[in-house]
Length: 393
Ligand code: NIG
Ligand code: FE
Image 1 (cartoon, protein in one colour):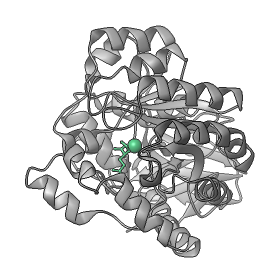
Image 2 (cartoon, protein in one colour):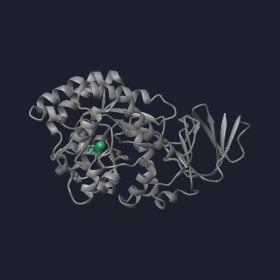
Image 3 (tube, protein in one colour):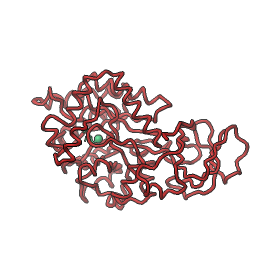
Image 4 (spheres, protein in one colour):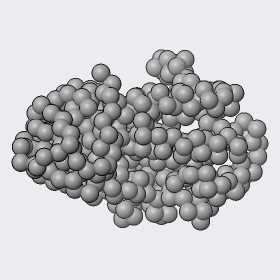
């Protein structure tokens, strides 16, 4: 048993704020929360010095496995070029596919490990991780297998692996889209066997249509994969309504949705995963308040990817959810913990309560208002399953 002594404020979504407490940890689980100094003897003590403790943050949307970021394109977008225009001109996802196919898996693993270590050091203990930069059978399945292997590495965040072969139509199939859709369908059982838990489709203008997405997602569900969907990010094409109709666990981005889509998500119990860095990058914000008011569970994601979001900092994402999307500090923290856990269909994390995983973050602050004050608030200490990791500094 170990004790995290002298926690100034313990903020755990769903429970009232607790002040001046000790958090007891037994193995990889939280054993209890007691008034400071009232726990019995333990083998190991850590002094939290009155700081703020929260559950480990959960990033519900990322693309962490790629060769290199498209920085020249980011500069072009900053100068006014649109994401769709750059993609049509040979940039975008297919540019990363060219680079990633040409890279060795050992280099790709090194790059992904470095990013994932940053996530963890910045207070994120679970990361949803998508494939999607091979768009060919062997590469996509090898990516699922690599991410599944990294999921067992205790020096990295926990991972939830998503098969996203339907990220884009690859160049060799541009004149035979239906063939590629059929392939993505056929690979679903293999992706499940290789370790994927989820299937995602980029359902949007210039990507996959609603009909194509539905074919893929139906096959994914039959293969035992749970469904997520990039929906209505670039245009209102019907992705959110499809996600609701198929009872997807998550519909993501949602920059273009209106009241009908909000109601559909609320009725289906589909989580709305919002990615404020990408939203700002695209110049269009999702209707976060309307979603919350309608009773939709909101999750947050960094959407880390080589094109539109380079961050691995969920505390920065929290800051933007608060300042740009209008969430309260408590709503944002809930979205980045229990909300994100719900989008990943897990109930063992996201709160600091007895029996939950001891994934914990001690922040460089003594009040949760710091999330609304310092973009990218730093973690002071991070525990994954009760094991302490070196902070990022
Ligand atoms: O979530 N929209 C599709 N996927 C990413 C972008 C990926 C990329 O541009 O490489 C997103 O924004
Ligand atoms: Fe994405």
